[in-house]
Length: 222
Image 1: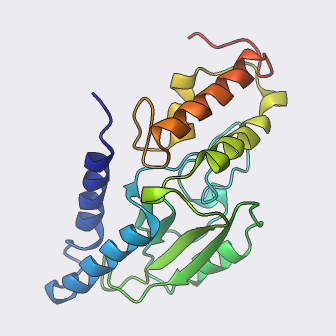
Image 2: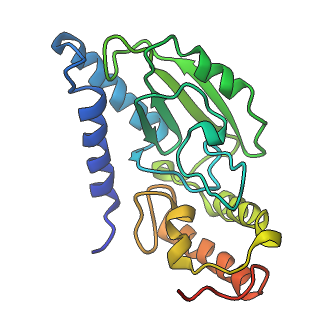
């Protein structure tokens, strides 16, 4: 089935709305404000997504042999709970003041292409007893339309990430195997909610050039 970005974005939005807004923990009188806040987050930070490409600044990779696609302890965050991901931010709703999340972000190493910022949100999400925190990726360069990461960022970030693993690799993985890790979720054969078809094809060419060079070892066929 062909990947339909608009349909995937709408499906993600409805999932987030059910999880953050239309939940028994949010009073009916609070849902209008929560709905508006969710719409503003999508407008500002892109569509709701299921997972990030491993080169995205929001998921720092501690061990390139064990790729991380969602924020958590392994990527340096602490205190995350009841979390929804957007293309360039995420909201987490712990039953505490959120200070643990903010402090963990402040301890993170600087990224060459973006700044990661965490701040509390004064909006009812998930449950009226939670303290939502927004963690956002502030790219140092402008993104393309619809919050897409342009080729000049996506391709070198992917190469930089994959280069970290070459000296410990036994096999070169096929593009089809790596596609979820390099394009993010949801994705199709040639694009995702992070990159356009043109960018994804450029990424594929660059990745396959590395694999075919033999730097990772023989191509895995199983």
